Length: 328
Length: 294
Image (cartoon, rainbow over all chains, first blue to last red; front, side, top):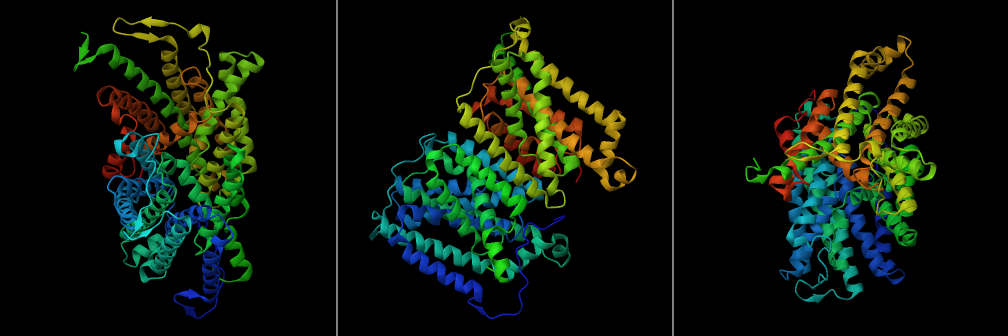
């Protein structure tokens, strides 16, 4: 990639001990995250927290691609939304349990990611972004017309069902623990992927693709696998969201959703472990508190985009990490 | 001859004409995108919003100042082009040393702001813009009725595209532009004011989008979302054509418009997605695009 790399967040760090693959600072942040996850539902509205966690997971999935491989997908709503539709359909029409519904949604999002990724990685940089956006728009029109998605109405009144067929998720608190568990599992999975030898190759591709190729790695294969993983986790996030709210609609496949997840990741910090989560929290909270301002929310989001690009490219977590000279 | 392949001729030619008109907009917008990308190395996501602004400025000129279509055709691109110059000087110029994608993100943010502001002012239902009296009515071509305004749009868009091509390929200014696209520092070393040329190029690309917007105002309703839905299709058009060649993007634009129109006749369900499907096929067969250089 020419010029500045998309991610310039890495602060200079010396040798340090790792705890479960996390640096010391990251491990402290992880502990804070766990405490926050446990304490938060006693202070904040659980449905709001679940929404936040779904978007945080979506942003983490997106960050896997933009932050660690340097691929800017402008069409991640397609996987998020499709995961939502399929999970909602499985739960409502086929009457499957929530965990199976979400898995089916994620699986289909992954298959879709495999096909789209295979097409999109033929081009780099700006073209990659345009191609993913165009493919996502194709999915949007498909969802608008396909009979099973319910068109403009979406799939409504999706039951949350019983976890493993036993535990009822109708209660918001129970549902919250389920969503939190899904989030933590996927978060740790992404962390594991990024810090595996496979993840090292992904980062090498981000820094210098021709050189990675010259070292004998088939970069296209690595990019495709990363794309599929990212799409699958985005599908998990979408499926979980549709079960939380009992509805899957066109909003989740619309291009503006792709823009939102990009904004969340950018605000939090591209290529940071905790950035996407913080970014999602900021954006979701902003949308919640400013909801009565209507279309002005879009305008504010536009301004945040510009501020991030012009002055604030490290994002919140990136700036903090830079100040503390640690990696977060 | 009332039917071709079992399709009534008026329907077939009507959709062909619609396709040609959409194609005219695809061509003008992808041309502007290609010119901007050539010199600035950014994808101008604001292009759709600037197309919308072109239509809105024409509407405002008519409704607030009583200035009609013909003046709007000149004034609106100038005004919107001027806003483009200001944007380039204040914000976009700070990004040239960075990754291309930051340019896309910045212009995406700008388009959110512009659309949001217009949606707050004018709602999203859309407003009509009357066809100017000189271009009202229709010609009877024997096999179909041809609204005069629609014919005018196709002819004028072709004229605008060919003029742009002539300026870039046949004038001294165009030669500088092509040289700067290849190697900007070298052209600057020869004493050409490259930063000013970049600013003006951006302004010209934006003006072209606004011109398309004015042409579109009497056909589509003038509404804040009219640009975004179009620009995503234009991105696909740009991927199909490749941004290397001016005439290539014009041909691709018109061609895809016609294909889309024909799809509406023969298989309406696919008409919204056909361009994206063609994009996939082209990417599989010729990743660099039909007219692109790898």
